[in-house]
Amino acid sequence: MSEKMFTLSFDVYESFSVNELWSDGDAPENPTIEDVKALIDKCGGVKRVLHDWNLIDRFDEFDVSSYEVPDKK
Figure 1: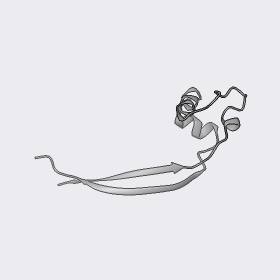
Figure 2 (figure 1 turned 180 degrees about the vertical axis):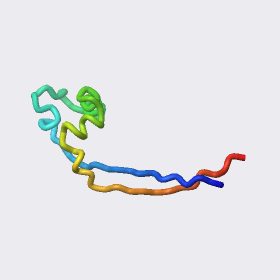
Figure 3 (figure 1 turned 90 degrees about the horizontal axis):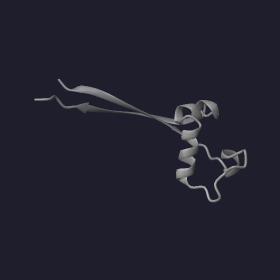
């Protein structure tokens, strides 16, 4: 018997200016996506940022999909 699996996807859409991200004025001269990823890591990772930056309540959308895992033979 195949097993039914469910995938849950949660999206947060929020825009931040350079000044908002680096509020101490220590932004890189020309910030890149990699700089923002490094900032998120420095702040403790995505889970910590969702909590500390008050993004946890801003989940705009969610989706649930399903698929079947075929039997192993």
